[in-house]
Image (cartoon, rainbow, N blue to C red):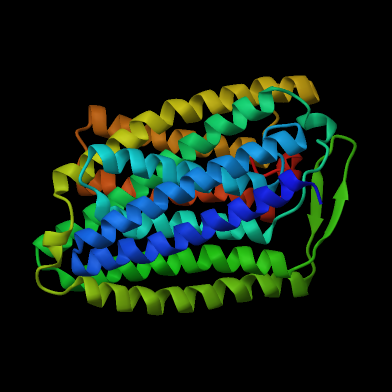
Length: 353
């Protein structure tokens, strides 16, 4: 095995383990408010990000192209972006507690990337363009910012309910969040378990043909994920409903500001990502826009976040309204990013970006 590839694998594992350990420390900080825990968690998270960065660079060198050509590389880059933007936000805002949600999310994404690991492969003709790394990098950075907005928005909702002593709503918020996450992970697990037939046309579009058994596996995974997520959400919600828990969270103003700024920076990046993707599509397939499922859902996501900014800047929507939109927005992002590739057919089926 190429020494660079071996070193990349080791550093990637170091990053995943670091994110896992850091996740526990941030969650422990949420529970105990231990400064030692969050300081150690931050140090380990920084070290994990450094290892992850070097792993991505080694992947680039060993493959001869930007590490964005398959599901492993793209998921790895997505997780890297989430950690990077969280650390930047933590440096400027008192949002350490958000790490108890954001860091585990990054860990889940990078660990799922490991499941799809494959060695460096030559690029298919459509991906042999410098627009690859430009388009994908910008898109992944915008996704990372939207994930940060999601975390801040969720804790805004929880904090408001806590301040109003609406503890049943706190439990409901955690149940809905973790149940939704369970469904997403279950759909992913089911889609991996299922083995649909794949047929490529002359343009490279991958058509997936699902049998009844494949569909049952996917729906079964979603149902199991829903059950486990709901149970975990109930336990977490009960824990968060304890008296004094609200003092462990940032103020509503801080959470609102972080969520808004993350989307305010992420939206123009998503816009540029879509534009560069259109340029790339024209070079690869001879048309700027073809309403491919990925293109369609990218446009839907763009409209959604555009509506978020519109309602905030012109209609005065702030606080809970904006927080709910920020939380729901990540659903559109994740379906655009993963759902389209795993469940639908199109030109992007061979690459998740």
